[in-house]
Image (tube, rainbow, N blue to C red; front, top):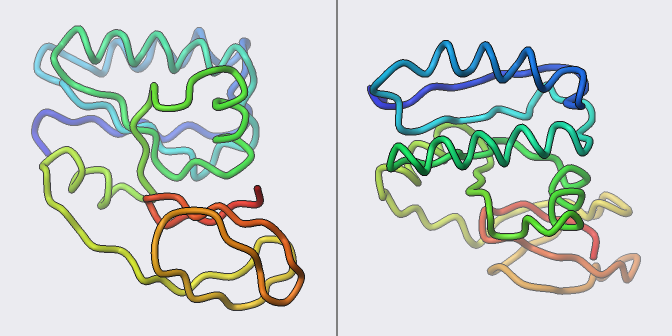
Length: 152
């Protein structure tokens, strides 16, 4: 994607990591980058300093008429951002391919999906986003629009 840049951070995304990472991303953005894909596949932990970095990046990308897309967020990281009051503030996708399709406006039907219960690993068939219960352990499940399944 010519107007896109993918950032693949690793380790902890905290205040100590945020400043140098912000500098590297700012230098790499150039003049034409409108979409920043932030890959969480190797991010172990997200803390308040990292959330602040994401907010700053989102504001920067929106000022350019683009978007920041969080790719591969783990359920714990998503819950942290939701708890901080950022539900709906960030765009997110399961993987980079889905993120690019989202930006390009390509609609993809992902349901029904086969998943496993995060509590007991029982195979599940999920017809659409929403809340349900695992038939084996009774855990309350939340199926997200992007196909991820979380407890809650």
